[in-house]
Amino acid sequence: MSIHLARSLAAALGGDQCVFGYSGRFPDEHSARLIELGEALHGSGESTLSSKGRLGYVMVEAYQNIVRHRAFPLGEAAWGKLRNMFLLRCLTHGHVLITRNPVTCAQQQKLEKQLVDLRGKSMNELKELFMEAIQRPNDPGTRGAGLGLIEMVRRAGVKPVWSFDQLDQNHALFNLALGLGDPGSQVGELLGDSEGLPELMLEHEVSCFYVGFWNPGVQKALLGFAGGEDPLTSNDRGRRTSEVGRMADMLYSKIHPEGPIIFTLQEGAHRTLSMGGDFEQGDLDHLRSKVLGTDVRITTGTGAREGTVLAMVHIPW
Image 1 (cartoon, one colour):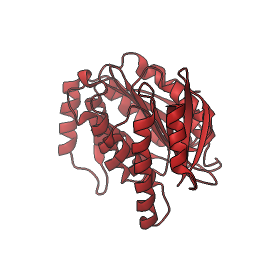
Image 2 (cartoon, helix red, strand yellow):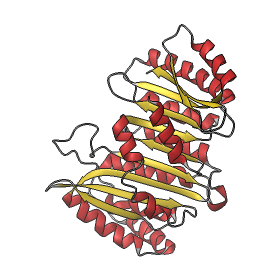
Image 3 (tube, helix red, strand yellow):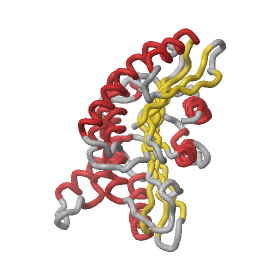
Image 4 (cartoon, helix red, strand yellow):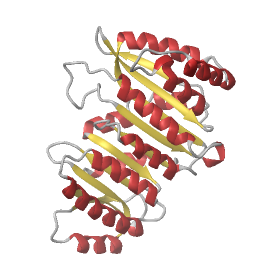
């Protein structure tokens, strides 16, 4: 991981509390990790969220919307614009969730119609629509009437914003933004950020990243995401996860208290899990002594605060 990427992620955080991004394999089991992450992040924007489980629910439904409806056009490199993507930004007052995934043109027409209809309804009308859809008979093996989309929009509580970018004659890139709490106009603004985090993730082949505050719940969820991308045997994965957990504990105690922790999992020829932030020089020297003689690398650059060093610890994954 380059120091440029770490610095760019820290800059992208701005004055917000945290940012999370995922663009990996999208297995079903990551839904459980999203619930864990939602629980760990409860409190960021807490004054505007009425239910502790709401954030996790909306994240899971948005994630499953990608899993169920993503299309697979041909002719695009693995880390090109067709990459499925999931982004969460925790603002001071609320959250913004953004997803993007290719869909067929037939799916585009259906989604456009559904979202226009849902955007025009009140919270009570959305609840009634959901109850009606539950009671309506559906074809076997289908989740009829767009139940997930209805309830996702209702629980988010902020009108959805979306767009479609034409890819070819048969496919479009579906971009969806949902707000929770009181994110104000930033839902639409963040969806329109065409040169921000998605492009940074694609350029550096980042399958998972997080930048912001840290707690044991965040750590557990992120290591779960990283483990889900790991092709090694379960024994190797368990050993590596334990090592990374111990490293994370050490980093948390040493990183400058006013700065965020930065976490990434990068693909490429050598998958690498990286963690770091701003350090005092003495704490960085202590960290170097702990990894001496191992396969762990440390890269450094100028820190954001006077007298600090931006350091990233890189662990083969």
